Length: 189
Image 1 (cartoon, helix red, strand yellow):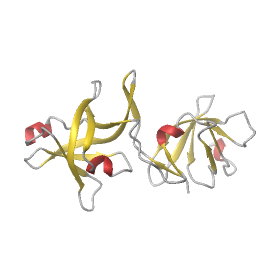
Image 2 (tube, rainbow, N blue to C red):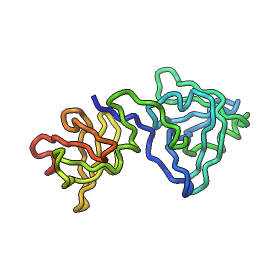
Image 3 (tube, rainbow, N blue to C red):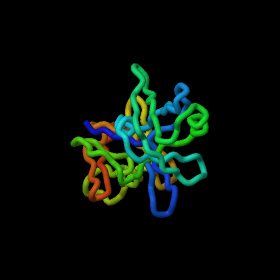
Image 4 (cartoon, rainbow, N blue to C red):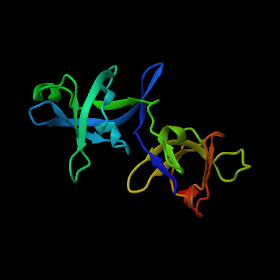
């Protein structure tokens, strides 16, 4: 089964560095400087494995931070993280609303049949392997219960295509295209 291992949308913070948004700081946790992070990544190690991360407030340059520890709240999708130098609640509260980033070069290894969102964006969507005429270009991925590829057509319309083996049986990253086998009527919606 094809699946997308998502680190959310990428952002360009400077001309030479691309970032993957992996979560958002949504609140302070307790009095000791811990932060609650709402994840936008399928990789828990983004929040639990110590190392460099970056925080960015909209419209500013990312600030380097050292993640010292992290854990997932039992039964919830929130993570509790601690950064070096953030020692009290007021310091933690000052970071609320910022986006947690990693470098786009810091992408985990994937299993067979898994893809990074960044690798799919820009691929041509074709109806057969020999077709140089593309249906459109992958412009985004919408995650929910099932992943949906957003395909931008040349006429400006956008199609949402379920990213499942039956409809997207082949992905050719090296050649820059993917094969669509949609059921009748899907492309006409």
